[in-house]
Length: 210
Image (tube, rainbow, N blue to C red):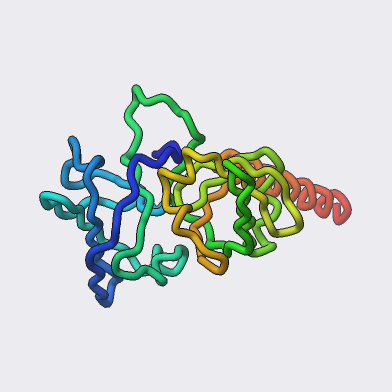
């Protein structure tokens, strides 16, 4: 489990394609402190397992399912990625609950400088629009952000200077594809409401046919 508060921006130094997915090497520094084989790290919001540790890098294996769901299919050497170690029981939950299970991807449609702050708009598939609410939480490439406004299937985000300088957003461009994880609480509520509606319809049909 993660908080969406990025600890470090790493750089992809190697990508090895295999039949069962990818093996990637990420150059980093800060998160190497107390890291162990088998630990979980969110890489651009994707929960991955550390399979090798070098002096200045970590290796991860990426499954085909993860590649299909995320922007990892577009990864390139020297690309910058957001890194966050899994939270500990004593950690403060400064962002929101992020599982590292990417739901889908979105496309950056605009980046506007607002002085010290930056506005970013991201378009995603309309099939997920029921999972977003104004002022709700969302994870973009693993970054915990608040949704300012929603225009159909485009979300409007305000990026403060600290987030801009300490994540890979500062390298973003219009047209870039980003990972999206919707708020887990919203997903559970949507599931329960849908189940309730299904049961209500089933009971109604039974009574009508009784």
